[in-house]
Length: 241
Image 1 (cartoon, rainbow, N blue to C red):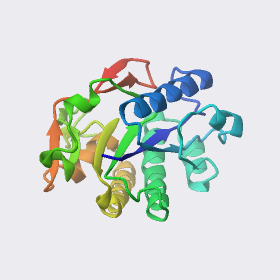
Image 2 (cartoon, rainbow, N blue to C red):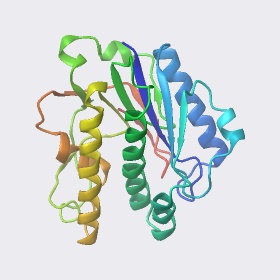
Image 3 (cartoon, rainbow, N blue to C red):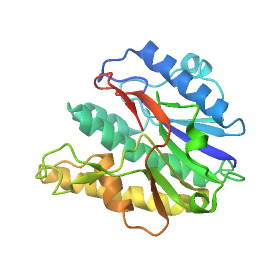
């Protein structure tokens, strides 16, 4: 299998517990872990810093990148960053929009050609050594499936989430590359839903939105463990998916 990893990143941010230097070092660990697990992988960084554009020096320190898509000069991204003070809204709305733009970029180029599967991986998370052992993506059951970790109960008040009680963790999941156009459409619908619910004074993050738009689809496989780990940007808490 030749995968393409779309790594979402926000090196410059006023939110969270990690410094710029720490975020850069963590992202280097992310990229090293991908290449160790999948030597043939293509890696695209989707960088959506709202607080400052990524510099050439910062990019030069990041290994194995086939492409960097910089969103920090996108007026919509800048507006989101400056308009909201809540980290959860800025993070989720920015990542939704940046992923739409990144998928559109990939659809218009040749990087996806020859790749079987696209992994959506949050920057600063690493692929563990048992990642491939836990999930054989060449197996008939998974090769044509959207693969995501098992749904988890919501930690938020049902009123806020529009009564959505389950969620899919979005730090690491994947889909066949032939679905890229369809996935762009799903993200567009997720973005519209996010905006609609926020106007009502409620809140749906990426995890709840993924469950709403992916659960029940033909060709989705939930697995108990994917093999990715890292630390939450907001608190530094270690998590494993």
